Image 1 (cartoon, rainbow, N blue to C red):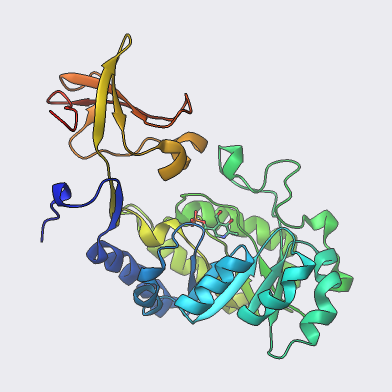
Image 2 (cartoon, rainbow, N blue to C red):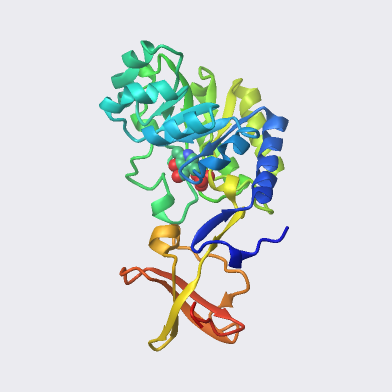
Length: 328
Ligand SMILES: Cc1ncc(COP(=O)(O)O)c(C=O)c1O
């Protein structure tokens, strides 16, 4: 079935369930081949109407706040993991209620909450987020390993004497990357933290794995997982977000009006700041069906939003025909 974009409300996000399932099947095949557990990172994709479907393929969710944890618990009902750079004391009892795995940012955070974990009414498996201080992410905004980062515990700050009760190590050092990057990061993780892995039950490789991209090397990922499972006798978790929903949908938008100020400008009913913040933050350029780079096709426009934020610009694109206002 072809989607008729003119029939849907504008703006709207459309998830094509067929494309989502295609991604989920790839992820499930990795789980089946390796025995690894793949979690949905809800920060990347939290359209919870799809959670029952996702739960048929993946092991559960990971979350980064109380309410994400609650969302995953209530809407998917499978494993719920959480990591945050720090927890609020007044939220911790409720976090414990929803989560089977809690990852602490430092040994100090673990020591602070250890007794509350031990008196919880269900078993909670705890881990420490380590910072391997090695990443290949060029944009600092998305690089958890830049100098002075607060994300995780470096080897210098790691306190082996406070590991009693800790069952796992977690790292997250990737962003939209292939398994060759993972392989290099794992080497560093092993060099720095390998001796602690023998006493752990699990390791979490974090997110940033672009597993559902067509050029992704799944064989290398399988090798990496099996190496850790076999050498250290560990359960392996991965928590991709973007890879779950990658290229599985569309953002539908309408040209509200056009104007000229040295360049033709089209004003849309969608906003980079509100509907696609990564476009400004990363920055990156969304793909538009039928459009080319500026100057490539006959008519070039700067696509901007109806908001009053001057820099709320999606980018410059060219089209075969003039863009028309909604009323034309
Ligand atoms: C701790 C952690 N896990 C998982 C993810 C998901 O990453 P991605 O959506 O790039 O796979 C992130 C993203 O920031 C993260 O910080």
